[in-house]
Image (cartoon, rainbow, N blue to C red; front, side, top):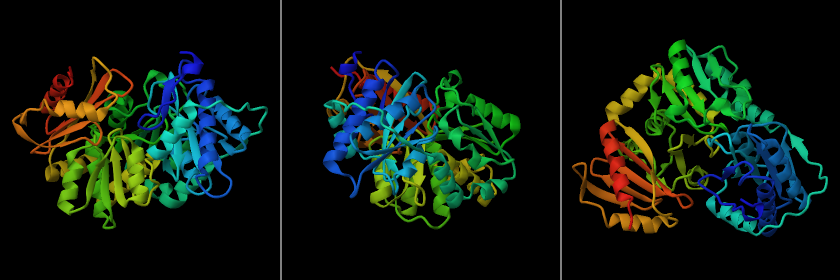
Length: 468
């Protein structure tokens, strides 16, 4: 793809592309100029605007970050670059008070050949309104030539570690554990903050700087964390936690080596937070999440809502709309008292605190949730499409016309079009169908009480996806 034709388009959380092919210096410079043009027209905050620039451990991330900072500086914008790789939550922290925006060079959980950009503001992912404007400016941008700009560098990682130590006291929490915890960094930048969990009770694996991620994908799905599961069993650990490539999303493994899906993890965390007696606010989750959190909300008479897929929508609810807990399907969780941003280290500390406070094993806590609120078997599938479906609402309308009155013997009681089409049955089972606007595929998600029925729901999605 010629550099002049590279499109800068935001997905659920940032821009992603294959390095050299569609994510290159030209992409980064045009994006930087788009940010500069946006700032010139908007001035997000009063006073002189400034941008914090961070980067992960991927190929070229530090060089892309420097190139971006140089273009910003050439436009008269104060750009301060991290002096080392860092997890995304550390870059987000820099935007809480001092910096107008944060730009993180990362492709998060994507394969090693990809890189990308995330935009941060007020301690979280920038809202869609801002990213849409930056995308528009970037598409028309002609980068100002950066000639030998001297870029200030700062130890954002040190500032983040100081914040975590002061607010969450990791040393105190981890010292009280009566057993080991295994932390799998999958070679990502979460490992840059290992000093925070330097404890005899913590076993860290896949920690070295490897831009190939050991041949794995830095995603926290079950298929990518077999080393964590094996290590938890081998060490007879209390639990295991995996963090994705930039340290914000996680997955949990019980002491038995059982992988907990996001639809099982979210209710475990939520129920504990409510039990502490300080839960005030509503529950917000992406439309691709499950029914156990909804049942907890129903039982506690807590306001509940669903958002489009993407943690930026959850973050907005946490920051400005009274949400006390937020979660998304890809393993992001945040709650009152934290940044409006998922953070692997903070989640690790909450789980450790939960085990200390309850005196229970993680598998027992998950079993208690299942006994009280029902079983959850969550699954997803990528389904090829014959043609692109850029208009999700139009797709949803067409599929709704094809729906039967029942699915798997249960009545369809509700359909939602928040993001694609979500079909909800009378027993809370559900199926979500979200076509990609840029690729010939659709992502289907389903949750029932057993694996067989979840697979049947996904099979139904394959048949419903055929639009003539």
